[in-house]
Length: 487
Image (cartoon, rainbow, N blue to C red; front, side):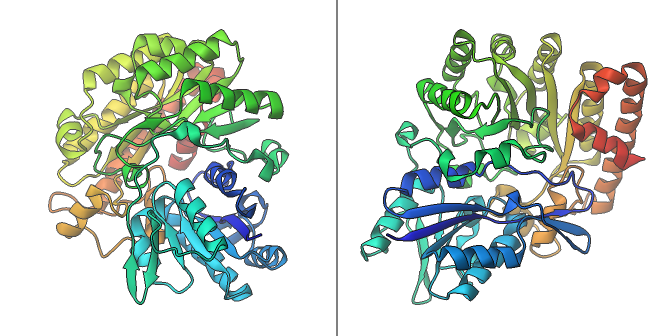
């Protein structure tokens, strides 16, 4: 039977970032569950290795090149599937592919994930990549493995990109509208204890990182925020698992693996309010006794007091709110998010009243935004932190490949060339380095806004620390990291 090795590559973290964190490779686990009947599939997660390699101003976490070579040599796979979740981490995926080809040039390399879904044309120009799975991977990869095993043609597989006589071929695959048809992730193909007992598990992503796992209950985003690339990978049509599927998945994790803490990683977990409330009602009725959070962020206009109340009752211990801007014009015309500031304030107050620990995402530095409007955002972030304990994560607008923001920046020549992988890695960190300059402001101007905000936040944190030391220390590490960074 065909041997398939799915690899989650190492990751490089730049100095000033939060540090090492590992996570269950849920995407690869879904993929493995789908293809396991037509091949011999294994998962190799490089991030579970304790190896750390210093490279200039960054550290690479995960299996060394020698270890990767050893595993590929021992496993002797026919096909190596490589996950590329972030463009900024592409170099590590590239390195895995080069090692695979060095071990055996006949190994077929397949790239998949958000980055190849956007950049498959440029990736396929390299000899180390044979195929790219674009968009959702389960059905495409299953058909690819099945046809490859039977020596059938690969040319008519929708969702598969490849190079044919120098020409890149690709036909889109419709997105899966029946997510409940997917099997549960292949938990048995990873060492569950290796993750659950690892001190770095989700450590810099959540306050409930121990004994926890990510779950995804829906896919797709119907909105059009200029900086977001989610719809390029998962589509704009919202699709979801049924509450029954979600409850069975939670039950499996609880009863078989003893997992009691969950990260809902959906991009729009509460988009369908009725479905979301049904899931919450089921968790409450079944008295699951779990804790959970939403680290990916929740769109605020999908929430209301009743939903928040049920979230609290069902075990939600932390919510991340996607606020983005403190200026209504920027929300409407620049970011195109179009959430309303008065309603944002209402939801923030509800979180405080219900004692739900809350974080917020803010983004500044968009073309078309003024410095004053950026300060509206930082001022709002400080006010909400001061008055409602809403912990801010200030990000810099970063032109991810394929997004409308990227197209604007290229069209108006707002970048110094195409973003490098290293620049993207640094820029996408909290309070990262700006990449965009306009005729109205420079990267230095944005940096000044960030530094002023960081210093002001440190002072607010200092006041809270002196006034309520125990409460302050209960909050997420991100706030404490900002305090240290500014001193």
